[in-house]
Image (tube, rainbow over all chains, first blue to last red; front, side):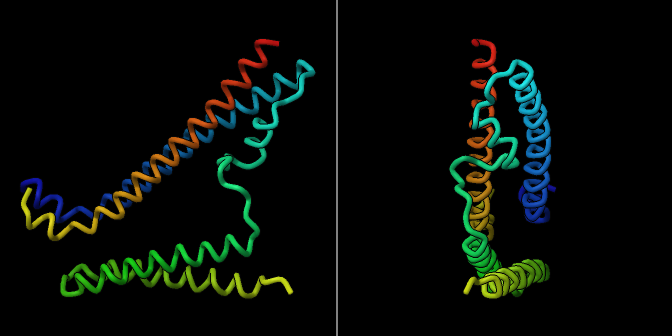
Length: 131
Length: 47
């Protein structure tokens, strides 16, 4: 089996491997940082000094990046809807192009899953609208 | 690698691009958090 055959058979493994790697990296770095931040806050408090606001923000916001300003829930739900809808549309187009292949159902499964998620996000957005 | 392989899998460019962007974003967030921790530690040691 050469590289091309191997790639053709297992290209889809890119996605779960990427997801698992990012998940592991995120978990390990998040755990290490939260320990460091808590130790630093404790040191500041022990010495009676004012804790830097960035440090407190990091401890409070569960490592949310500073560039991501907090959005109102309705706007966030609407954005989630568009994201899921775009992914569903992309996988639907992908499925359409390769529908003759035996394994094309995988694309359809992902497309339907994201379409359902998009629908859910839309329903939440509509039902949580403020008067 | 053949031209045929590229013809069959050219669309993988888009998810791979998304993955690269995700990695860059995660690295940027990580660098920011490390900088905040480093600066806080330096400030604590300076005072």
